[in-house]
Image 1 (tube, each protein chain N blue to C red):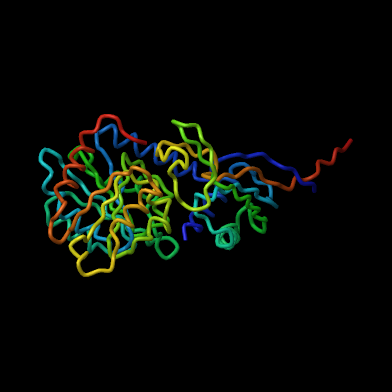
Image 2 (image 1 turned 120 degrees about the vertical axis):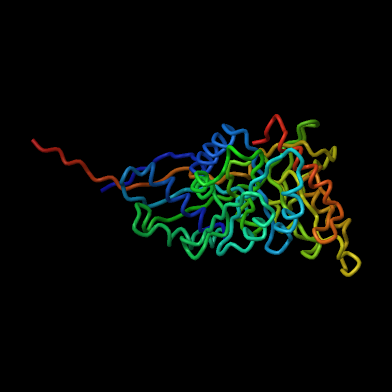
Length: 118
Length: 226
């Protein structure tokens, strides 16, 4: 249910970059570790986008699978369930290489044509 | 009319994080350490605060109480003679299910920051949304009651992963439950390896001493964890 607040965050971020132009597509990168439900996010986004530059825009979500890196032993591995100990050394000192994103990657906007007149 | 692609590459929650940083600066100015205290509804947050807030020697405690509606929890804590500030989240879409940095920011003017050393922010009961929003805290603590089941860390990994202390509450009920405590501790360790845990009971007071000591340690901690 955090998808409602996350939708508002997307719309605010996009509005900053849209510069008043109408937005047709929002490309979002979502790491699986963020526990976002894509359908729910889409539903709320459509709702929150009303009366903003994002109204009617399509939200494209690229899901990023989590990848971790063990600091002591250097092992890199992907996780499918939330189990974060290093499979090689059983250590707990790791970094998240990817899978933690919630990032507006790009947007597509409509530009009015400039008609040059003499 | 033609279409243009605009590269953005911006964390969508940057706005929240920026406000959280501003909150943190305000807290730091008065030397106040802040704990973001979270759990599912009914895990025992308020009881565990009642057990400790008036009994931290040399540490002046304040509480910011986040609730969707009402001031029942704030009233309970105010009777312990610590400053309690109520923050209700209901004015928006039927009540936000968490506190975000901006809501906490709005409460800062009414917090007695110059009169306290430690601010405990009791977040709205919820294991999902509060995990996502930083509020400018030094530390995040969560309560997990043994009545919730052993699988909760696996179902709400983000919450367990972002807390540096997990209080396992209601252990006085263990004889009455079919509950595998080792399984819970194993699952917590899977999701957040080596995270600190304290087993306690808000009802009997067992283990509460360790919780009190942990809070005293935070209040005097030099290097804050972002």
